[in-house]
Picture 1 (cartoon, helix red, strand yellow):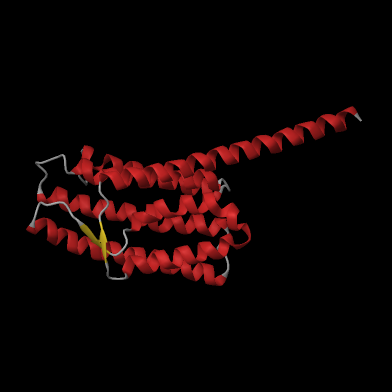
Picture 2: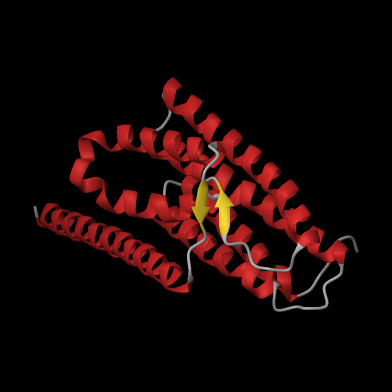
Length: 226
């Protein structure tokens, strides 16, 4: 079989599976579940590099395969998937679609550039990366869930805010600046924030669905009595 199969790529593959599942949810109109899948995909991606580095006897081909497979999955999980999510949220006007195309293209350019630099860096040193050039594409998994949670505060302008978020995030993918890699405490804080956002989204939609069902049930009961 083609490829390399060991535990170092399991989280990467699970991240891909979560994102594809999220796309299915978005297609069927369950955006709250799609957001949950995006957050889960980001969580899995956070730890895939740490897991891969625990295997000390990786060959050069295995390291290069890991770099490529991670970036290819990132294109789908944090490039294509957010575009689909935002499109079904309402970014269907011409400016919105142009922004989404730009976002995905910027993410693709960033990942290709990262692959070139990362392969060279790993040939020169075994030290962990301390800085990123530009904003990591996985950041969208941290940005979108809180944006959806707080959308009720600016409900009338949510789509406009979403346009701005996707445009600015895409620009930050390709603008040259140093972005410090978060330490373990900062990663834990980000995970907690996103987890809280996901729990809120799930509880909110479940409660809203229950309320809608209750009123419908009451109404149908009244009509039957008549």
